[in-house]
Length: 389
Image 1 (cartoon, helix red, strand yellow):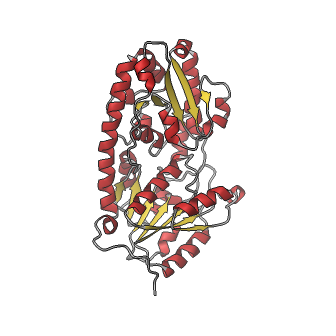
Image 2: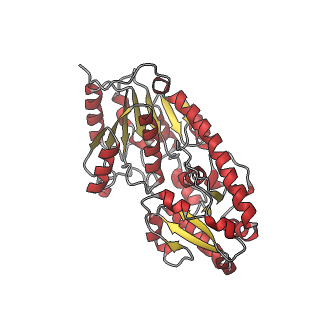
Image 3: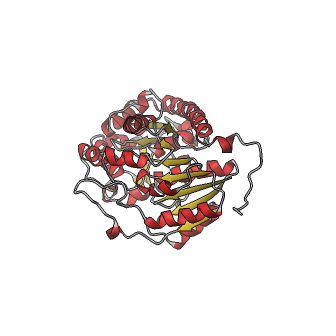
């Protein structure tokens, strides 16, 4: 069975949530025996090592030339039209693959990179994996004190894109409801499909009370929302310098190179090749995210590694949890929570809750995969690799 997937972004390295999302979904499909035909649309420059990693991971990789920043259109002063960033060569290449191979499913990543679905055969199921809600995104960013960045369009333009698919995939339920209200195309929620990899408790848990500090970690990319979140954490910690006697704060990811990381109480570790190693070195993971759209992949990752998570309500959007540690308002409340908690009890309860939450979450995602890909998950015959005659 063959699946054609297009994306404006690469899958490697795993230093952004959107890359982790695409990679996790593709690997889940591969695990069921599917062959992945991956078209990379060239929105970012692709160094040789990234290309090599992608070619080693996916069955068939097609890479288009880089799409220069200066070539990206913005048809209106405050927002884009749905196809402003589309690359016409994607349609040409996708049609060639569809003419050559027996493709069973078509998946376009991002609604604004979906125009090729218009020419795909009607009998092939066509999906748009949305990642985020882009209708009126510029207005939501402005409301959170951030400038408009990356891609934003109107609800009406976004609905034009949704109409190209047989099914729209929302990454979390709150956005699914908004999308369904804007389109007649069925919307299915599929969150981050990741297998739990529960880490053992760190040695420090047995040493609490003996002067050993609790390690608090924050792993993030350098997007504007994460920078705003780190800035808020810096301010909150500045008002509670006593916490530095009880906690050590670790920062990892490309956010370490952002200007807000220049003066921070966090130890900067930079980009980490293996996220598992970072999580293993931490007792508590924080996510002080405020606003934004989509699913916060770093929250799911922390839960999947079985780490105690302290997060804002926004950071848990799409994840079913009513724990006080997951319903905090902002960075200041995260700091207050850390200051007031009983360390041994909070860590034990937090780790246990993470395991329970992510196991229930993954049952929901497995059910969604069954709905979306019945020919793959319910097949009886082995998958062939033959080309069309």
